[in-house]
Length: 135
Image (cartoon, rainbow, N blue to C red; front, side, top):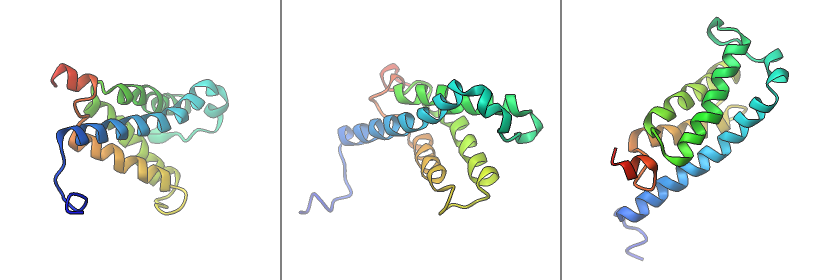
């Protein structure tokens, strides 16, 4: 019981937790990006024109973040740089698309951003390409 309530943890448990967090967030986010990538023409018609870049550019940036950055996140390559576009994408989803409705429509984006910020602060762990390369 004393170990259950302990705040200490081993290096192995930390690295497994980061691996689980990276893979679960990456796989869940990559599905959104893949759908946008496959149905690009359909999404482009009604996609939000963020910062006046145009619907095509905004959708392309969203696909880059949700699909390609998620792929890098899953394998743990350039992890801290990879989560920055994902964080920006989720900030746009929360504040622009869902009007800061944290406990309603933006609930999933809020969960994603919390996980991405944790990865940004802590890093990918040793069970990643970054960890293997020693970055």
